[in-house]
Image 1 (tube, rainbow, N blue to C red):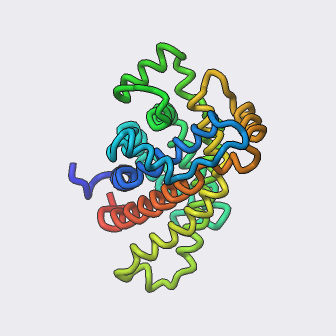
Image 2: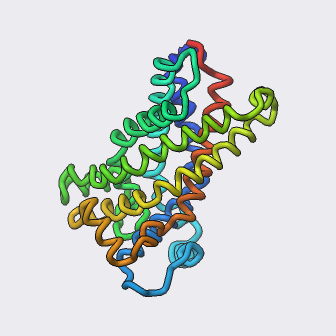
Length: 286
């Protein structure tokens, strides 16, 4: 079957998967540094010196070499390629069903983006758990399939869904807030920009602004999610929140905010820019 004859939702899946692949490969080091910063927090004594982003970066390069910054890229691909594809195909399908003849408003954009992320987040959570463990440096898994097998045998299948609530509390609001800011910012641009050669740059700029705002708002949930998934046998979401606050105060919920904000913002901006440019060329006709 020729690509031009494919169903629009399949095209959205393919465009989303390709955009997710590009952004994951480029920004994986930021995700690894973010995870290391957040997991280092649980082993530090209150009042101890602050570990910064550059300290972690240099430590990884020194002990694991430059390629160590891409540790966990395999499970990241396993999650992102189908995950972003599911997200964009769900987003496209729901948008076409409810907003075929109009543009969604601010609150409708929140529900649209959040709903699509909920579907993708639940489906891909087991791979997200493995990805987090790869990056934290505490586990010596050889492969994604080997890690899945090990977790199921030693902790039970339920461990693959650890941090579900924290993940949804992070990803659903992030995507909803992102889509709202992104769509509303794009709508405020002059119409001639969307059809000009500078359209990709304009879309990317809108994505950067939306990503920064959404990342900062959802950062505490990301810290809690990381703690629960790294310590699934000893921590629940509410317990992780209590420990983080008792040991490190409110600032503990923003550990790793800089690398996460950079990564999520750049990844989301690139993914949406690539997705929209590809869909403009190969979709949506079937």
